[in-house]
Image (cartoon, rainbow, N blue to C red; front, side):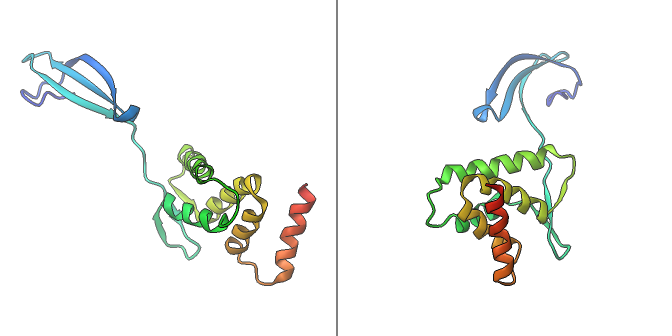
Amino acid sequence: MRCPFCSHLESKVVDSRPADEGASIRRRRECLACHKRFTTYETVESLPLMVIKKDGSRQSFDRNKVLSGLIRACEKRPVPYHTLEEIISEIELVLQNRMEREIPSSQIGELVMERLKKVDEVAYVRFASVYRQFKDINTFMNELNKLLEDK
C-alpha cells in the first residue's frame, strides 16, 4: 500500500477491525519510511452481472426486477416477504459464484421457478405462465400436469 504522505510502497498494519457491519475491513497502517499513520479499507470486489435479454440486449442485473416479479406471482398468497428476499439472495449468490459475468435471462427465470415451486405451487404456475408465455389453455394444463406428476 502506497503511503499518501511520502509515496513509499511499504507499510505495516497497526490495527485491523471490521467496518460497515462486516462488509469491509478498516486497517490502520504505518509507513515504514516516514512513520505517519493512515487508514485503508478492504472490501470484496464484486463484478457486475450482465443479463442477456431475449432480444439480445444486455443490462445489469437488478434484484428489484426479480423481486417485483416474485411479488406479482405471490400476490394474495401466504408467502412472507422475507422468503422472497431469501430466494433472491440465494439466486444472486448462485449467479455470483459462477464464473460467467453474462447470464441469459432464461437461466435466471429457471432459477426463480425452481425455488418458487418449493415455496408455493400457485405462485410457481403464475410465474411460469408469464415467464414461459403460455399461448393457450393446453400449454397451461401441460404445466399443471407436470406439477401433479412431480407430487
